[in-house]
Image (cartoon, rainbow, N blue to C red; front, top):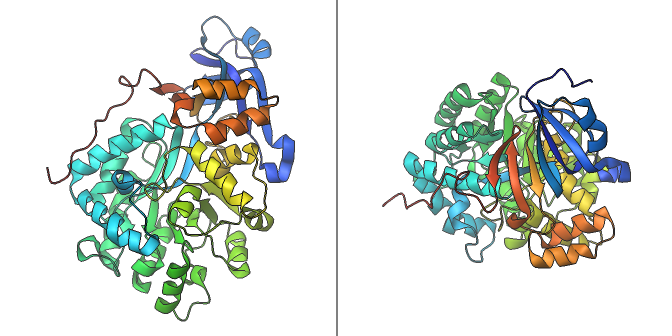
Length: 454
């Protein structure tokens, strides 16, 4: 298109990278890289991408040109599984999943009955996402509707594309974190009516996992998804072997863990199952046949000792996979650090995991898992302009290390293995700066939250 007659254009000039396919499928053709590229944005969306030398002569002098010379611009990262209320207890010592839930997670989640506290944590949580270059996340709230109200309210003020839901639990949990099948339906329905598709927000029906929901509650989840078919289903699956045995004892008629959800008609497009480590061949085929997605959470899986995710098997079955930090069992908000641990998990299984695969999973792979390809995840024309500016010289050592890298892949791999939030120089939301490293205070709104009891 000829942009000479288009006003209010913003042009980002930098080295630019995005993905148009999975490297496991398209190899070197999966990514696009423009050294000295230009990204043209109008009204918060991408209208052109290419080399600076080709694009700038087509624009008139009303375009705003923002230069990030020598930096790398990429789509914003997408976290496909994370827990808002577990922010304050990241790094809680040393238990496996079921004990960890009882000792740490449930105790923390009780505080979110206090909406003021939920608001404080939501601000801090969103600040951390932006600081780490994450622009979209699929988020667990707590059983309290006010946790979701607080999170969505803060997200809306920042114009973020976020997906979240109220946890549904009606058994095997503390009494003050329990709802019932009907109340969980009623509260979720009210939240959907209030927030779903409001601005850039979407709702996820969120049963915690099979052991904490009765069959009656799972049927209420199904009812919500049928009434609001463009909402999401967000839950856990086959994270821990003891959990899998527990599910079998609670649902003896079920063929396997996934069949509990399948029998309730919860395995579908826009269903995202976190972890999915210990899956049978039948379960893998079921996920693929129903276009459901998996969120791979490597830092959490290692921290809790849950097991090693078999990415290649999911690739072979054509299952959409994104990556999740799974904060707070996950130990970093950084998708760079998440890719770091994902590499090690594949190494332990004798499988390769390239930087291209890591950055694909953190961007377009996440968008595909969330059924948002064409909206976020790359710089296709019409995509929302959520993107990050990455600094290869963020630390003196990283600068030294990357100076010895000979190829783009070597640079990206060093960034994935050695990088963290310091590598994110700037985060843009719909074409506007929302976080800037070294000048954080004008962009970040929160202070450390005080205890809900204070």
